[in-house]
Length: 324
Image (cartoon, rainbow, N blue to C red; front, side):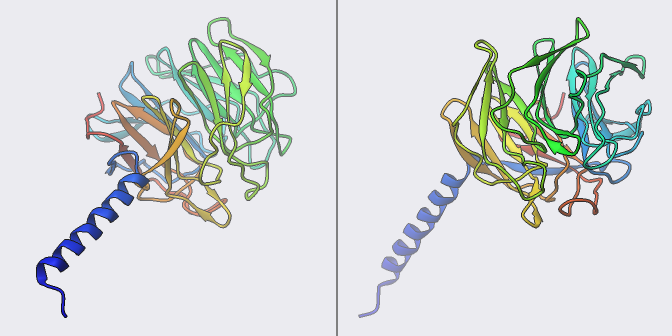
């Protein structure tokens, strides 16, 4: 006997609810991407940070001396003081009203530099900080700030991944060597959440030698914690952003492709979830956060070199809010 129309409707409704539950389980919460004004030219292996003091984003690297500033209020870009050297795989940190550009590579996979370039938006000028410790110059490592100090983990030195971990005191203008990461790796980004420096994913020199390891350095104990929930999608060259107590891993490359994947690590529950994918898959990027929005500019759309982009997109894990 044929099913009655109301029975068919109930069955369809159950199926739709089931599919919705699966979709919600795959995502931490609804998230949306938007496009913003493109940078002035295409490049990859870039640094990108937001200065809360000056309410501007700053883009550099990509083996170019051009440094650009993005104003989110007017959605416009302008060129500011030129970078002192043509480098890529630079990591940058915005701290106390200044932008710190740490290390980098002259070209991939080397040589590496140990320079610290400090940009002051107020004077639109650069100053030099103390160089990285002798024999520990590198690029493509994980960098994040805690207090008045900037921590640098891993990276490429003499063309190979290292496990070194060092800290730069921006007040004393000095470096200190800390306990090494549990394993050598490069092409990852780091972030600080709740008194811990997280080093997640990346690779060991070769583009496909990716790792999913998730380690954290505890500032209170001065030691590394290992065995945290691993990164679900192995990749390198991604961006990382902190939103509340969660750490977002965005994009990347490896295994013959670039990624649009966005995965969020909950530092409280030690668990992962997936958010809406980035519209333009790319690697060689940094993410900058302003008022809950995660901004990504530039990057490479093909694995390895080639196909750089000038596109800028922003992810809102929660309600859409203006950057201010």
